Image (tube, rainbow, N blue to C red):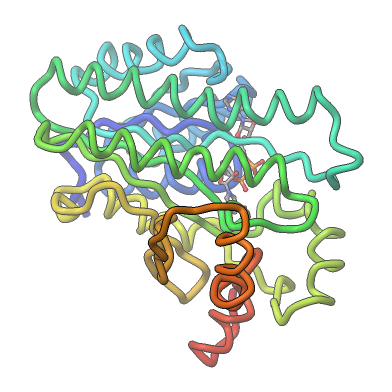
Length: 299
Ligand SMILES: NC(=O)c1ccc[n+]([C@@H]2O[C@H](COP(=O)([O-])OP(=O)(O)OC[C@H]3O[C@@H](n4cnc5c(N)ncnc54)[C@H](O)[C@@H]3O)[C@@H](O)[C@H]2O)c1
């Protein structure tokens, strides 16, 4: 198979977990892949493995949260493969903590890696793709936790920010041939294992079957699709893949009903009393609702 033979793609955080699965799958479809990870040994091992299987890959280790490094990552792809057609902002860190426990260091580091890393790389990739003038596809990585979840306030906030960034920058890229989308994956990885205790606690509150998280590889075809020409008409979307379930995620939007008046404090009180209180949005990750609606098990 060489569906992506004309593509050269950077995958960040590809020394393990989902990123490594993406890199292997993309290379298997003929894409040239730049394997980034902050862990040099792991990045090199994945690149070497791909190359030894006949694929095209180089390792470009480094920390995506360093704004200037993002540019050098894109240039590494240019140098090795002569172009850059895709960029997967997969690198991320996960430090769950309740609101009362979250430390400044952990919160700051999640913003730096997850949000700044994604933003810096997306900016660098889009800038280079514009100069090349042949379009391109940038895939960011959000998470179901952006909808809100216990102990995932800080992590989820970085992922919600990534989703929001995707919507805005996809709008700015319209007409350029460069697309920006986001995915919300689900997989058994080192990160998911780190979350095992938390998931067990959460599972008491909802019908989620976390015992059977999908393998990382199950998420890779969606990434290939978004990087391929087959998704040319898809822009600014958040696509969720959760085992056998594939769906789009709604964008935050003004909810009906929209009341109109000159809003005094008294009128707002009455509006809530009579109408808006009954229309409060569902709070938190809506796994149970999805599970009930599709009548199946997640994962
Ligand atoms: N596993 C899931 O179910 C799940 C669900 C939703 C979202 N995600 C997201 O998917 C992505 C991959 O997650 P995973 O489960 O494979 O995690 P993982 O921890 O197994 O792998 C993440 C990789 O990113 C690398 N990394 C960390 N900081 C980096 C940095 N500053 N620069 C470069 N590389 C860095 C790590 O070394 C690691 O190899 C993350 O963005 C994560 O938030 C995962």
